[in-house]
Length: 219
Image (cartoon, rainbow, N blue to C red):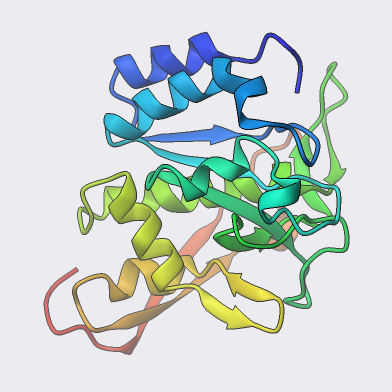
């Protein structure tokens, strides 16, 4: 984590009414909480304002329980609106590089994710908890847009509570989160046209939502 992190943009986002934030950054293991006090202030203000912050668990491949806590992932134990995200694979296992342990709330896809590259290089496949975190932030935004949860801590509770339990921990399940919150139902979400997607080229996708367990009330 550089000594001048993007704390001002985080305060700006909070002040202008953002509902969800993504922090794909972090310290190494074992850094004292006091060493990153400059970051905790904006995180605390975002939490108090009801912003859900998805934060990367880090890529050291270690247990980040208290003796090896990384920040801001460790704030998940302090602030109810902070959601610490590890990386999972397409085999529903924890990625070998992903940190794990108490502060990690859930896992999301973070291995070989098609991503925008810096310096004008287009797109490529990247791996890391920094890939898994924006997946989770996007899921939080979709859940919020459904109107089923008010924000912040409630979004975290909903995403964690609807996650699939795998051998490595809880893995994000957006379809269940959107379908199950307050309705008693669940849905399958299928995207069509993904095979035709190419970097820097227009593409048309279709979305099909199928009720698996019909809800008790309209969604």
